[in-house]
Image (cartoon, rainbow, N blue to C red; front, side):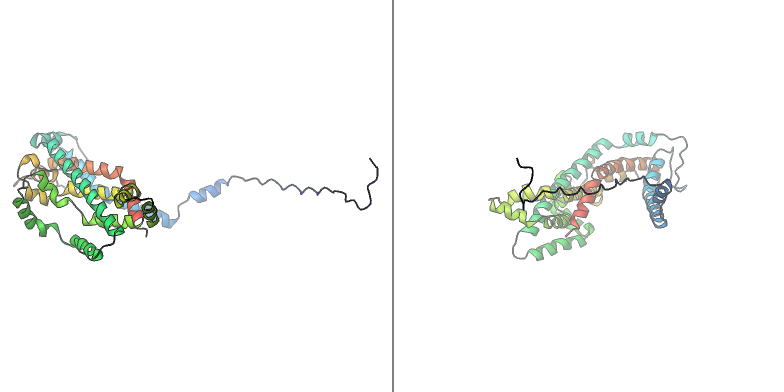
Length: 308
């Protein structure tokens, strides 16, 4: 091999290595900086104080109810108080001895669950029809349906009672459930949720040969579950707390619901308020449990239906 390179031959020259960059080290913030971050701003502190006061105002009636129910010979004449001397559960024992509370609670639970289930089925199907199907007079029908929200139940009690009497449904579970088969508010809320579902999913399913029923069950319903949970909680609470319609349609004690049972605890001349408050606690706890379990779905449903 020759020692010299031929003239014109390019000699490869290695590129100079770039200088090494200095390693950047991150230092933890000083204790003073961390304390400044944790320090609340005046505006945020005022907001937290107002929220705490609002929560206390909301919880105070319930706490007062619980305290009165465990106070011996509790009365409302002395004003609200949260101080209990010698707490006792005699009011709850008197309540269970006076009324068949477990049967009454079971009636309320059964009616509330059945009413909620029917409202979910009818509301979801009507919402899909109003949001996805095109038919003549759709907007007019939907507007008239929403107009029923402005009609109070007190106006409809007499015609509803005549209708139930004609159908021989008075003093029955069917008579209790008939007016709550559908809900205009539930249809409105679910329609907003269905409209937020992209139509491209429906079109893709239609190309694959899916029918409206399959699109409704397999695409729309799973995507509007937060809204369904919201409607379910509202319907359950409304049915659980309703008083006027059961008072009109029910005559037998075996069909009595909790609001009717609590009304019988108030005497004509004297009232044992500790027993009444015990019954109130008995009726409030299931609703509170249902709301706490579905709170996340309610917030998600309301937020989801508000996005257009």
